[in-house]
Structure formats: C-alpha cells, structure tokens
Length: 215
Ligand code: ADP
Image (tube, rainbow, N blue to C red; front, side, top):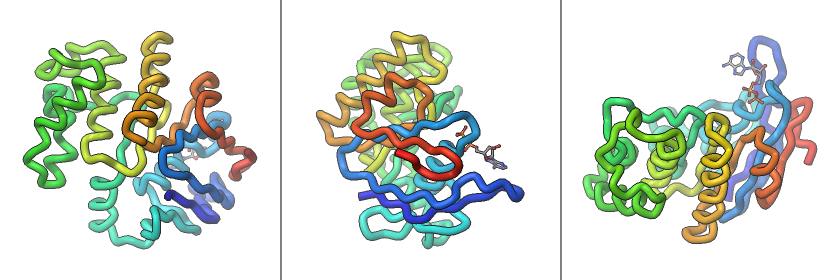
C-alpha cells in the first residue's frame, strides 16, 4: 500500500538518507528505530509528505505523492494521512472535541462532530470532550491527538516518538491502543520510536543505519 523507492535526502551536504527502500502493507504496524540523528524523523516526514526527497519516490497505492504539486499534496495529506507527534501539538485554546474536528473541518466535512465524539468515546475520553489540553493528563492529551489523527479515516497514521513524553503506564496504554486500533479498524501505523518494547511489539522493526535500512 505504501512504498518508498531509493529515497535520498541531504541537509547542507550531510547525506542523511542514502537510498531507502521499503514497502508497508495495509493493517501493518511497523516501527522505525535507529540512533539519534540516524534520519528516522526525516524519513517519516518524507513518507508523510511533510518533506520531499532529493531523489526517489513515495507511492501510496498507485499515487506517486512525491510528484504532486503543493496544493494536491496538502489535500492528499489531509485526506489520507494522520500524524501523531511526541508533543501532541494540540491547539491549547481549543477543546478536545474541537481539536479532533480540525482536520475534518479543513476538508469541508461539517458532519465531523458525531464521529469525533465517537472516537473520543472509544479512546476512553468520554466526559473530556469540552476540556482544553491543559485540563487533561499527558496520556489523555496524546489520546486526543490519536483521535485527531483518525478523524479523516487515513490510510496510514505516522507517529514520531508518540510515547516519548509519557510516563511508563501511559506509554504502555498508548502502545496497546495502537494494536487495538489495528485489530478493530484495520488501521496501519508507521511508528518512529526509541521505546524498544514498542518497537519489538510491531509486526516489523526497520532499523536505519548509515542512511539505509538494515533490517
Ligand atoms: P532522528 O529522527 O533519527 O533522530 P533526524 O531525521 O531528526 O534524526 O535528523 C537526521 C540528521 O539530519 C540530523 O543530523 C539532523 O541534524 C539533520 N536534519 C534534520 N532535519 C534538518 C533540517 N531541516 N535542516 C538541517 N538539518 C536537518
């Protein structure tokens, strides 16, 4: 479903990615590991269309996203891709439900409220809908960001160190949630993590070393 072919990326003469090839199937949970600075986030951003490779292709089904113009790429990203970041990136002035609805409103879907409430409910956040991020625990904030990632029913959710800022119990709960979502709704996840437990739970663990995937 998602393929990357011969991805190269350099920053100011530093060759970070030197020919990455990978293929991810629907309903897979794949982890990406590697030392700090190995290029994990760079790869995730390129796969998620937040950045473009210097060379190589990213294909979703048969769409070559790396060749879309900026406007089409933004539309594609909004409709087909969900993101979860280490520091949840929720808007502090908006409530949980409003934060979850934002990607759907951008898409012009005015019917998102009901789906957002349902998502918050299945993520164990009933009763927290009207809370602002500062009124939620770290684990709850991250679950709101999971709901936001899922609101447009994306093909893939990309997560960059999603539990990096959580206590160990909240981290374990979040990791379990990814697998529950895969089992229940068939969600595909690609997760960059330092957490070896999470990396090991994944269907496949890819390691980036010296700019290429070694496993
Ligand atoms: P990881 O996620 O594995 O820790 P990154 O992908 O964040 O690694 O970064 C890989 C390397 O690329 C690092 O040396 C980093 O400093 C560099 N890098 C990443 N993004 C940029 C950027 N926008 N501009 C310049 N250098 C960057």
